[in-house]
Amino acid sequence: MITRRRILASTATLAALPAFGTSGAPDIVLLNGEIHTVDANNSRIEALAISGGKVIATGTSHDIRTLAGSNTRIIDLDGRTVLPGINDSHLHMLGWGMSRPPFAVDVTYPGVQSISDCLERVRAAVAQRQPGEWIIGRGWDQPYFAEGRAPTAADLDKVAPNNPVALTEFSGHAVWTNTRAMEIAGINPTSTAPPGGVIVRDDEGRATGLFFEGAMTLIFQHMPPPTREFRVAALEGAMEHLLSRGITSITEPGLDPPELAIVKSVALKHRKLRITGLVRAGGVEQALNASTETLGRALRGLSLLDLPEPQWMQIPGVKIMGDGIPTGNKTAWLHTPYVGGGNGSLTIAGDNDEERVVELNNIITMVHDAGLQVATHVTGDRAIDTVVAAYARVQMANPRPDPRHYLIHADLVSPGTLKRMANLGVGANFNPEIKYLIADSQMASIGPQRANYEWPYRTAIDTGVNVASASDAPVTEGNWLQGIATCMERKGKQTGNVSGPEQRITLDDAIRTYTQAGAWQDRADSWKGTLEPGKVADICVVDERLSSVEPSVFANAEVKMTLVGGQIVHEA
Image 1 (cartoon, helix red, strand yellow):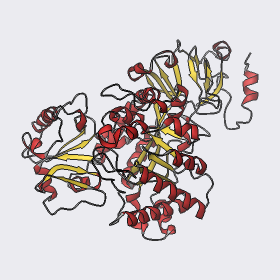
Image 2: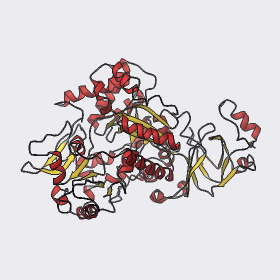
Image 3: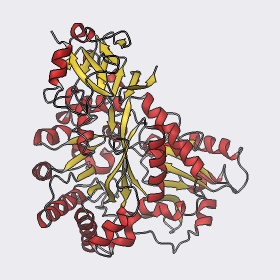
């Protein structure tokens, strides 16, 4: 039997951990559940006890109940699933908050299934605005359009002739605008796109209203910036929604210093959601042509890297944009051409591939030498190979203990490169919810073999790569339960067809990618990510016994309770 004396003995090495609350008993005990500890053995237990914000004991319901005192809150789980708090390790919380109503027009599927549906939503927004006011929206996805074609500025002109309109695609890698927006931006037949960007033009050379990758900035730079109050309200709304979904930690990737300062203020004000932030490489461009020392001084000068409460907000490194995405945009850099031709390219500055590779290596070198973590957005296999080679080169030239550099997305990483990553300790951040959205339409872009292989979970995990899963919201709805289902089933949303069954993983493996692996990426796996004694009591309670139901029902499961540091922050 587990006794208080035995618990005290087992936690004696945790000097900073009080064995129990001031009453001499745990603050909370959870009983009669299926608790996934996500320890090294993927142990499942019935009950656990919480005190001082940490897990202090795990075991059977009978044994844990004996620890309870008169002031202990006893929660009967009634067979429900308990997981470590979900760590969404790549989620644009600020962008997500600002892309949701009432801050933006929602043009996501299934509410929007055609260009006509989009126009009706824009028409409604125009009716509530003054002429000249911008209409901002997000979420359209061309493969779901009933018209079977790309949208154009002429479409939007029908409902918004006097208001500039900018509707960002679900992926965040394209924007659909109207003629008024292009007039404000000064787009004409001689306009050129930044490196890696694309202005889509018709056969006569006229811009159609679609802008890909870096070309989106041609439009965005003319939009009025949101106020600080607007951003704080969007952040706080997004935070509450995330907590209601059992998400207790996120990585906010690629913000400029002013944006990071706002995120920091919200994080430390509420102390309910653990946030890891990455500085966008563009935010330190002024230092990239100077010395490594200058880059490090510029980053430290943000007054954000040395945060007083890193358990709530930390900024370990920099996000770099390597290439685009391997969809119909054709902006990911591939070894073998897309269906219909083209290989994409890096989105780094440079007039040709060789110059862009040199510039990418320079940026990675300077961030690594500054002692920071490097997280690089790469999706195409050629871009991935280039970045992994750069990681290997900088670590050989300037060895650092466990730098934990990683790849963001890494859609088409090859088996050979996965082996190299495992040897280097380089992680991968995969996106099963995006797999669910695009699995079917990818056939037309990259062919069936690559579409089925995309996000090779089984191969990566078996090779020994640390694989974290993330939503990349607002690219997706941020439903990690759908992500777990997709890891296990590999089904596409449009048809339900299985895409790459050989890359399926188990429930235990999938849960680990959303918990312990994200904590590893955060350099926080010593204190969060599992439900072992001594770890923080970040907990998600799901109103299903996940091991006993089909993955197809996961997405609609309700999160009944969320705890962060032993405090209940959501209770359905």
